[in-house]
Amino acid sequence: ICGPQAASVKIIALTKNSSQEREVNSQEDIERMVNAANFLNYRIFGKKEGSPVMTVTFHLKDGDDVTISANNTSMWWHGKLHPIKDTALFINVVDGLFFD
Image 1 (spheres, rainbow, N blue to C red):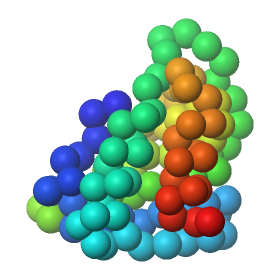
Image 2: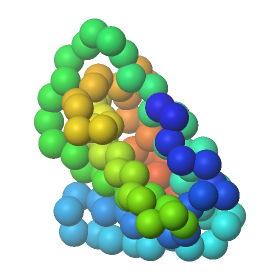
Image 3: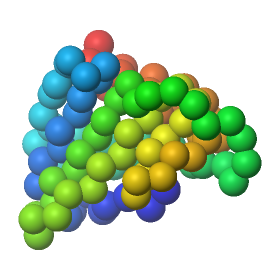
């Protein structure tokens, strides 16, 4: 995906399983999260299923928000559901960096 650039992000809100929440505001953590979002590559064809287990909202300095949600097999980007190319990678990386 082509998410926001780290320099344009003010703060990031992370939600895991609709219950665990975390805010990321250090420049180092913002850069890590932007890089992690770049792991989300979707396929044109494939199975799209389930509900999001991780939601990432980038609150931008210009006041806009960019939200990406994912589970182990699918991602939600611009309101559309897409199958993920590298299943579970994004969830595992974000979980390891920000929740474990």
